[in-house]
Length: 184
Image 1: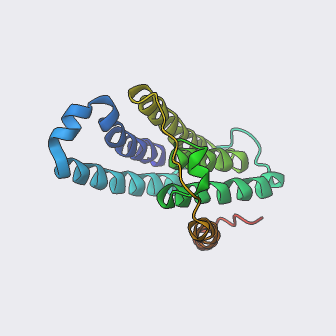
Image 2: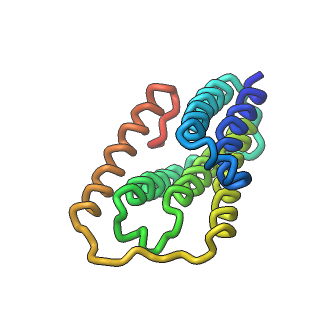
Image 3: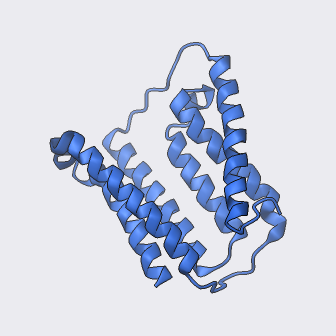
């Protein structure tokens, strides 16, 4: 049952997010109602993924590597920073076209490095594939990327770094509460 919920959660997340890419005119015609559909489906998808992951049996596919925990944590910090940088338009957004989707891909790869079970493969590889497909469709629809210009805002950069460290700490704490110590 856990695997089924996990897959349904991935679909509830991915399909609404890809709706704008596969049927942009239809999505645009819905306006704010379309945003509401995506938001509700996203929350349902996240809930199903969490419940499904927690319910799924631990079926090992490859051995877990605790030696990769420091690399995982570094990638996670970078992933969280990319999310913050995207919203704050920091310097990295001049070099990385899709910082949030890069963050998702790094998050997924980091988790695959330290989790070798089937549920982790389904969840993290599934979200990695979703992010890859999003990037491909965005780049196909708008192949020319206009890089941001102008002076760098040091305050925003510091805010993104500090925010990433704080969010990483909070996420680590929640993982510990759930029984997964991300710090080794």
